[in-house]
Image (tube, rainbow, N blue to C red; front, side):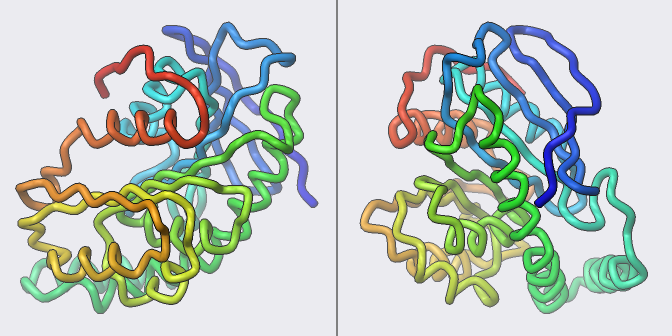
Length: 258
């Protein structure tokens, strides 16, 4: 079992940001600056999008909302071949195939779905190891509530993760093809919030609706927003914060732009 090692720390606007590694996997943990070790708080694991990384503005923006708005901790690790992790020759081949499909105006799903499924197969045990290590911190603890939020690649990794990990009790997903996720989605019974873009030129709305329908959760909410893939609205991050406040405990006191 790999232990967590902090490698850098900074603080601003009431949030402490700590870089860490678990084994050779890099991540970052955001926490309330005013919280002491004696005051535990829920943890929200996050998954970044394809081609992004653990400190992408979408990640730091969500973390800011969760920390300052709810007093939660938020953590994310770099997916395989992303951020500070080296790409393999296979990663390069998959990315080149995606660029070729995009340039030719061909459907991306046949390339992205198997690539993301491979990344998820690697990332799920890494997330579980990171969760093990993070729960050893006194300010988080082994018995505290845990949530997960991830869009696009974050959903491709998050759906099998949440299906396999009983410690995660609420999840936010969105914008991903369902092909490789149906089996895992049918195993998920925790509350789910799911967002899609109604006019998504990359992922057909029927695909997003099929994935939403597959979740076995008794409580699941669909957010369908007008616009294409890149028009995913920032206010969905505020909605996710309120969702976690309801299901993990806490009250939203503020939101901040990202």
